[in-house]
Length: 448
Image 1: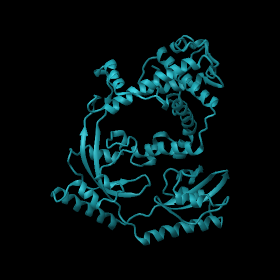
Image 2: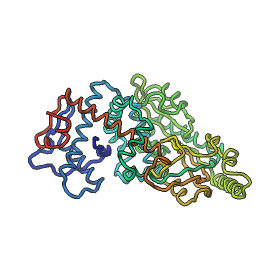
Image 3: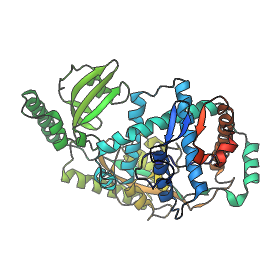
Image 4: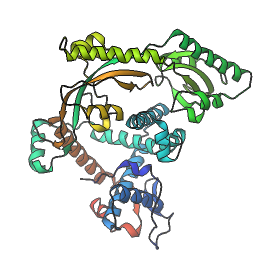
């Protein structure tokens, strides 16, 4: 099976010294129109050794990293042959989704991410563009190769028999939970103040007193764009809020919109450039904040709901249906994992605050009110009810059939991709530097 190296090697800079006989910028592989430089390998190997704590230089490990790079270039070559197109909408959507994942892991604190990488959010997203685009090309090619591959229950059982119970993957601890959500109301006076501020910003820009991007950096509540002057870049229809797009796509170049309301708050928008059905825009977002009194009232309300449940006057699902403001409360209050579409969450799919709360509960226990910030940046409060916790364990067919099925299916797909590679190298011009012709994959792939 082809060895898989983490794709994060494309994100991390830093490299080791190259072999003396190979200049750092020498081309060490040519795959169609694609090339691999010695510096590419050094960067990738440096990240690999850091990620897996490899202490000593290991030629086999270096060859494995090199194999991954050649494989990646072969996929990109095929994407070019197949004329696969990755739109700006796909690229921006994927980058924003990943950034939201990062933000969720640190409780929405963009500054923590910026401190970790030593760069602004805008710079991080800019650095992500090329590697994310390449990954999207590779995913498209692999999807075409494996699109018709399925797996049967008998193949899943055969996979377990062949791999062995002791070699089954570890399943991390998982949590099933529900919540009762309530958002503190925002006063009309606060909303009016927000609108007035945005209208004053617009007037100042129109009078050329200050640049739009300066106001965005100083005042915008959007952590993803404030540091780059509110710049969203080129977007196509269907990416942003419908009411936002309805205004943005009707602006003229340089025009600043009136105040626009969305789920995230209130915006003004500036159009920079139009290219066909794509527009380059910036925005300033202001989010109305509930008063301290309303926040206290919301917490007290949830405390009273919690007491009703503790007094067994109604069960959790009944209370969720009656009191929760979550649109999905008809599910009984149970929260659905947006990544797996199941009710199970592991630590990596939970934000820090939620995980910290759930890890202290026992099944059947209800938390006190905790703060919750949704994807739109709106602050709410909620009660968390831990339905079940399953400790980390080796996967088994009874509890983890879907996990094992996924592993078996991935193995089958990897074998299909390996067969595809063996056939593809016969019809693709591939040249490998003499220093690396001893690598196992060169013989295994039968590269001349």
